[in-house]
Length: 376
Image (tube, rainbow, N blue to C red):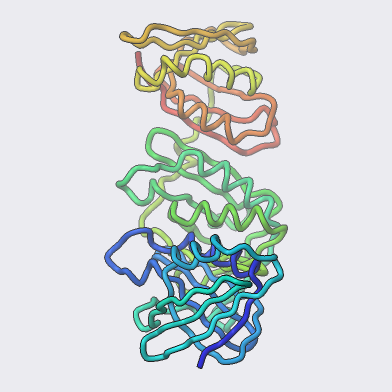
């Protein structure tokens, strides 16, 4: 009967990672389980909610092959309760094949648990075959672009295209990313990235996949990517992420980007962030409306809520053009500031009822953030 041993830390890391792909709730109880397969000196763990799938393969000492599913939350809690050295082995031994009783032991801790079959678990792709071509790239450029593009992604239920990021390889020369929730738009380019000939198209990636992809990119210097049938695949040495793509048409973001402006204001990012923090207790009680009174050398940032009162703060700024008073959603402005590393923020404007274009002070950056103004 099935029996294998696997290093405690490697198992814990793999379980915690792939468990992020399992369904938290849903009609199929099996989607809250992990699929475990032990064969040929390795164990493979798989978690999926049928929108994304995460796979991890780690070395193990296999005495007898086998496969089973187990609730992700249960195995996480068991491993979290064990006090063990990182190199100590966790033993899995099937005691009764008919009843599905398995013994899991590590050090002086022992658990008798019920495992489940694999029949209802979704099919797992066979990667590395002739129908899958992977391309390698540095992770840094993708990670930065994903962080910037995600800032305008909607978190509300509704249009799935708005709860997604557009990864656009369609022009063949420059990789772009974009997101929009109809009130704002984020557009950026992927630096130091070569588009493969076979992938010159647009991909709409659901929000469900974005946090896991970000973690995958941030923990690996390089990553491999490609298409598996109609899904996007990202692969590192230890983990694979497979995500379905959103069906629909992403808006033409180039048409939304303002082509020109009559005013341009430059301000220190940290100083502006402090102003937003100062007026936030009031602005959050006035539909997040925040006012910018921009003059030649200074900007007055203020908010007014009838029942709570009024708050204002001043920040030094440089204005090219005529003074202007304009209102924005404070959260939208804060979201942009929080993803920047640049010292300065530039806001390009035309009139108080025309979209504002936010960008980093670094002219080499192609990160652009368009925000609809709030009227007052």
